[in-house]
Every structure is written in structure tokens, then in C-alpha cells.
Length: 395
Image (cartoon, rainbow, N blue to C red; front, side):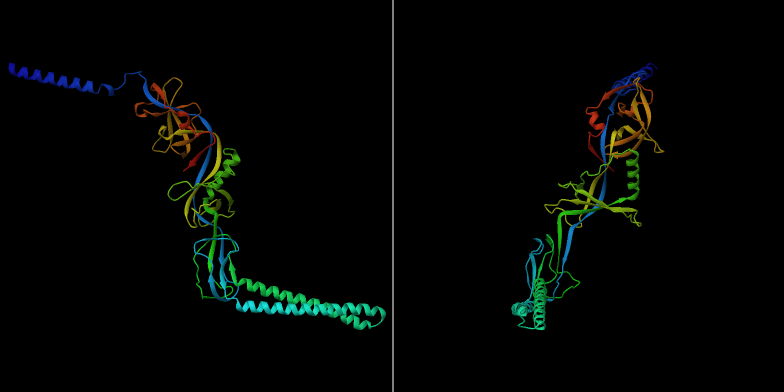
């Protein structure tokens, strides 16, 4: 019996030792006594102007496009450019066999020379007749005929000159030149090919890539909302701000663009309208047909307040709230309305004001009315709002 009591006593002592050991190990995590302040991290909200932007998808397209076609028929004698290279306006691209056109031009020039010689004779005769008619050496009829012959000779010279000009133009068309400056693509014909005036197939295509267009689309509903905000004074206009271009790999293009125009018609099938941005492209990084994204300024908001996203909670109904430190040093729950995400923050519409201390860490330890010990996060000001004049991207 004594041995049994001794065994029970040892068991009870061991159990108490284990309990005390566990209590000692978990002492740092035990519940706080009533009235003890809970340490939390807070961010003090500040306000400042921010520029709201919108990121839109788009495609690049050439600034100018010229399809090179022959204006006279003939055999291609030479191709005078390098495919894929840069060409200047007026640079020769093709030479068509011009023997026939040159012969026609030479014949027209000969006819002009003949007409000019006849004009000299007619002019001398008219001058002599005008002197002789004064002394009645010739009749007035003969003098009128001489003057009429002079005017006819002058008209013949003008007609011959017009023929020379026409054949010269045709002869010039035998040498096909580039109408614009830009990069030329591949040639669709080779030396010896027969081409015809006004043919449907272009010989080559020249595209001007500096500057280059970026064609975008935006929802008409977004345009209406933006116009309402601008009209009500919620946003200030950002017209004239540069447009940032983001490439397919996520990197930012080194040159900013400028909004050229907005389409006046909404596409009924998509409910969107087109915008066009002009972007400098001196290094030819952007090529026609590339997919890019453009960041456009949609408006500037004065005295905007941004709150870190970890300080905002949502209930099952989608309502948002934040825990703030009240004037009495206790946690206080606020109903908050946020509109859009800007980086890792929310743009506050209502519920919070400048100077509010929003709890961002330690939320799981507190509830409304609990005393808290607020510790300000370093650099809370810049993390709470964008720097004055800074840019915020609307997602």
C-alpha cells in the first residue's frame, strides 16, 4: 500500500513539473492582463497631389506608309536599293528601261526646235510688214496676215514645249524614286521583270518609323466617368502630360510619347474608342505591329490620401474597414470607402482623414476598444501617399 501511494505521489509531482515547464516556455505568448496596452505598428496618413494614370494596351503602326508602284510600263533594268535598309525621300529605287520614252522625248525636243525656228522667221516678217504698212509699201491685209502668222508660230512653240514637258515627265517616271523617308521592305520584283503602269501589286513598301504611332483603345464608360470627375472638380486635367510606353518584356521605353488625337466615334461592337500616341523612335526599337502598353494621365487629384493595403479589411459582404488609434489610445474601427489600388496602397474616398493613425501590424491581437501602444513605421509619410506631383498607376 505504501509503495502504491509513493508511485502516485511521484506521478503527481512529475505532472506538476511538466505543467510548470510548459507555462514557463509559453509565458511570452500568454494572454495580456486586462488593461495592458497591446503593441501595434501604425502609419500616420498624410495627403498630397497625385496624378492618376491609366494603362492601356495598344499596337504600333508606321507614321507614314508609301507603297511604291510604277507609273509607266516597261522592263525593270536595275534595283537601286538594299532591302530592309533606310532610304531618303527622292532616292532612286528602280530603273525601268527608258529607251522608248527617251526617243519620244528627243522627238518632242526636235519639234520644239523646229517651232522656235519658225517663230524667228515669223517674228522678222511681222516686224518688216509693220514698218512697210506705215508707208503703204504693203497692203493692210498682208500686214494682218504676217501678224497672224507670228501669233500662230508663238502658239506652236508653246504646244511643242508642252509636248517636251509631257515626255520629260514620262521619261522621269522610268526612274522610280522613294516618295518618303523611311525603311524599305523586300522587293516584289527582280531585274528583268515586266511592270505596268498602275498595277495592283506594289514593287516595295516604305515605312517611316521615326516617329511611330501607338494605337490604343479605351472603354467609353471610363471616358464618361473621367469627364464627370473633371466636370465636378474631383480631378484636375492632365492634358499635355507625356505618355509612357511599356514594352512586351515589361521594361519602359526610353522615349515618352504625346497623345495625338482621340477618335470621335465609339465602336458599337466593343464599346470602346481609339486613341493615337506619337512616340519618338530614333533607334528603331519599336517596329510596326508590336504589342505595347501605354500609361496615360487620366487626372490629378489634390489632397489625395493613400492607405496601405494591409491596413484595410473586408467583410463577407465586401464592406471595407480600418482599425485606427483613437484619441484615447484605444483601437477604433472605421468604415472606409476605397476606390482603386495604387501600387501597394488604396486610394481613400471617405472614412479616413489626414493625421489618422492606421494600424497595419498586430491586428490579430486587438479588437475595438482595446488599449494599444502605437509604434510608427519608419518612413510612414512617403509610404502613405505619393510624393507631391508623383505618379500613381490605376490598375
